[in-house]
Amino acid sequence: MSDPFTPSPELEAVARRFFRAVRQRDGKAMRNLLSRSAKLRFIGTAPNERWSGNSLRDGLEAHFNEAPAFLVDEETHGEAFEAGDIGWAIFERSIELQGNPIPVDFRFTLIFTMEDGAWKILHRHASVGKPNADTHGVEHRALDELAALASISDLPETHTDIVTVVFTDITDSTTLAATLGDRRWTEIVQRHLTMIEGCVTKHSGQLVKSLGDGTMSVFPSATVALQAAMSIQQTLARGHQEPRLSVRIGAHTGDVVHSGKDFFGTVVNKTARVAAISGPDEIRVSHATRTMVGTAKFTFTEPLSVPLKGLDGEHLIHKLEWQT
Image 1 (cartoon, rainbow, N blue to C red):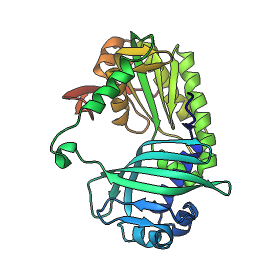
Image 2: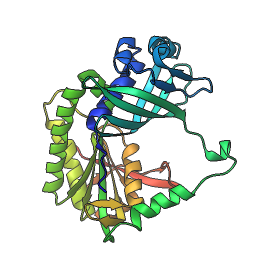
Image 3: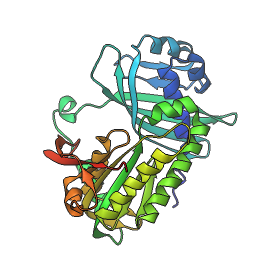
Image 4: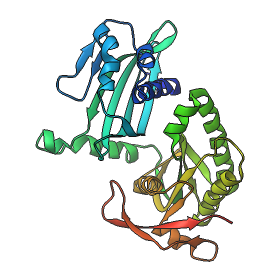
């Protein structure tokens, strides 16, 4: 049986418009994105936050106006799917509010229905992730283990390769998208991804996938991977496109599991973490990648020993100088 649900960039854009309306306290925009059905439901993060129907539509703006101002609202994950007249999206956002200097990781589920040719939110559920040990008294591992096995052991025709993985990510993309609007931002991202693919291909790499406005690529050697990373930054620096895009890049080398056109494993995960700690216009590389390329062709700053989210211990990370 074929899966009727397909990825939906359109629903991702609708969800982001709703989050932007909340952040900007734009009550009219919020209401315009809500279903007119009496079955409309919202569940918030507090025990008593469960609303429905007209009372929700009428009171939503006042509810969000009671919250402190947003200082940071960073999307850390987002995806959406649709089939016919229904769809859903899941998003994770790191939000820092005025008066609370500690960012909170929120998770949102949105269910959509098609009304008069436009997607409307029928249900929204918000939660704040807490360890199961805090709420259940135990940590649940079974699903994590199954997911890990499914991503590696159950893949057809898997084999391992030693490659250098490179992640790129546009910095401050949420603000840019909100300023430019969905249509304009989509056009800019598409041109950017075309440029990335050109640099990757020119240096014997393979663009594995794009992740929103970010990318993952693999290369047969660390040398060509870093040459491609430098080419990306230099192309952006020479460009005259407005707005000027700023990109952070991370690279790591090691054994990956390869199945079809995709790559998996801890090396991929570590590369994503290296990219995440890079600053705007920076290229950061792991010590493994730094060791592979030697000193003849590249210039690096002194390494930093840093923790990487989700990985044990401290990791040596080097900054690659790319300006010529």
